[in-house]
Amino acid sequence: MAEETKCCERGNRKSRVGQVVSDVQNKTIVVQVITRIPHKRYKKVVKVRKTYYVHDEENQAKTGDVVRIAETRPLSKLKRWRLVEIVSRPE
Image (cartoon, rainbow, N blue to C red; front, side, top):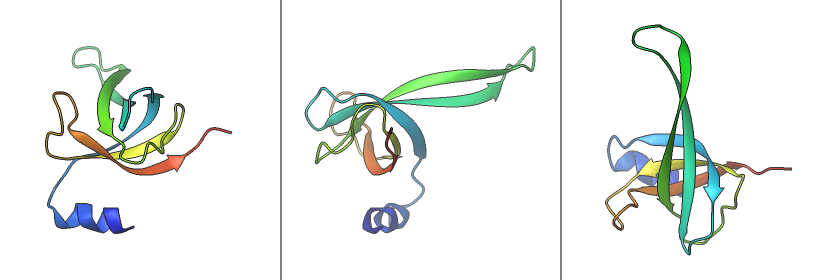
C-alpha cells in the first residue's frame, strides 16, 4: 500500500500488468505485457507483446508470476520500470 500511495504522489506515471518471463538476473526481472489492439486497416483485434526490464529490489518475483509495474527514472541502460506488487502466483 505504501508504494501505491507513493506512486500516486509522484504524478502521472504509467502502470502495466504483465507476466514475469525471466528472473535470472540479480534485482532485475523481465516482464512481458500483452495488449490487445485493433489492426489499423483490417480492424481485427491482434495481440501485441512487449517486454520490459523491471527493477526488483528484494528478488521476490519469480517466473510465471503476474505483476504490476510502474514507470520510474532510468536505473540502468534498459531498466525504466520498477515492481509495484505481485498480483498472483502460479499454482
